[in-house]
Image (cartoon, rainbow, N blue to C red; front, side):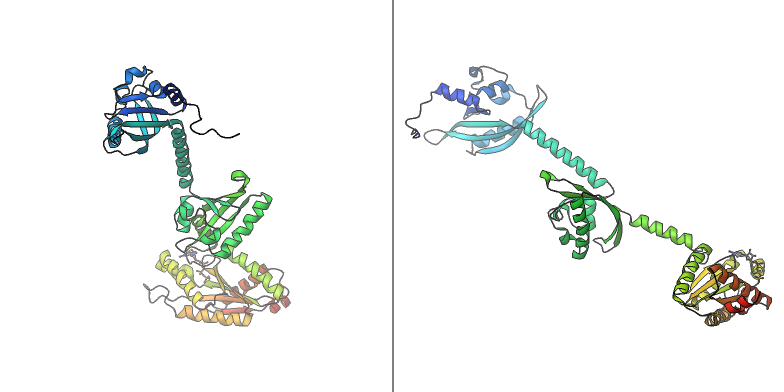
Length: 438
Ligand SMILES: Nc1nc2c(ncn2[C@@H]2O[C@H](COP(=O)(O)OP(=O)(O)OP(=O)(O)O)[C@@H](O)[C@H]2O)c(=O)[nH]1
């Protein structure tokens, strides 16, 4: 069917146009050059309180509706249209004092010109976008609220898509990467981390995306300042927007917690006065070394040491000096030992030195070296005349030793012999000697 030409289309009367304008769903009005109504559609009349059209002619919006200070802005805008001929399209929010309502419009105002081009009035079309605006405000507030929660929980939160790109990052994660959030969102994980690290994470991610399983585990990573940090990471698969799979991650920085745990563990294994291993830690490590030497047929020696007449030192110089002597004594021992040796305080003034890989004869030579160094040392600088000696019981692991306790007992007996022999000496008990003697 051929389309009618403009000339053939039915002519609309002024009344028809008015009815049409009442139906457009927007506020439509015209004013004269002074900003006073010359026409208003039904919606405008309803807004003004339903006066007849005749009653509003020659009057302006603010004659009907009190919008307080916003009235000045409104008049200023109208002036720009009526005086300067500008077309203005902008959002306007009017607080209606009578109802306490705040209404927001998207308003277009343009000058109406006469045949000579002079401005004779203004055409205004406004859409009520209050509901849309309220919805936007609500969404914005909810986003701000969510951001406040996610940025203030003490954790690194992110969302990553199945394409390896970050969909969300909170401020803590941004700080860890040393970049603003908008430089993280949309980026590939491999752009933010060393590729091998990103690939290792991605392997885990792939598994979760494929199986829907959750992940929880410890991870470590360098932060933006180059510090190695420890994390507890929990990752949960999510079906995502429009069914696009994604992963939600919550990472807790446990660096400090781990440091405290390590420190507590160190303290639990260390003698607080001398800084060497304590008795419990010594026996744990000794059992381990015993088993290792057995398996590999490697030598293992033990030196049991006791400071001579230590009670006398305490009695003559006081307990604090006794403490200093113990610390100085340990330093003397350590100075003579290699890193593989384990020096431990097993009692008040009793020490043990475990020597993995060292045969008994060589262990006695080490004991002698320590003994000579201790006897020559000044262990308490405030008492230069104070001389300290120690006795040493030495033994090596024997084929018949059923457990480390047997080695320890033999070293202890060797130490007793050294004490019996007048102190400040070392005594070696070979495993074979003990096996043959009752
Ligand atoms: N200053 C100090 N003294 C300690 C500590 N632990 C134990 N002692 C003291 O060490 C002394 C050990 O004395 P004894 O077991 O009689 O041995 P000794 O005097 O060294 O004599 P012999 O071993 O036979 O040469 C005691 O006086 C304990 O009070 C400590 O941490 N600091």
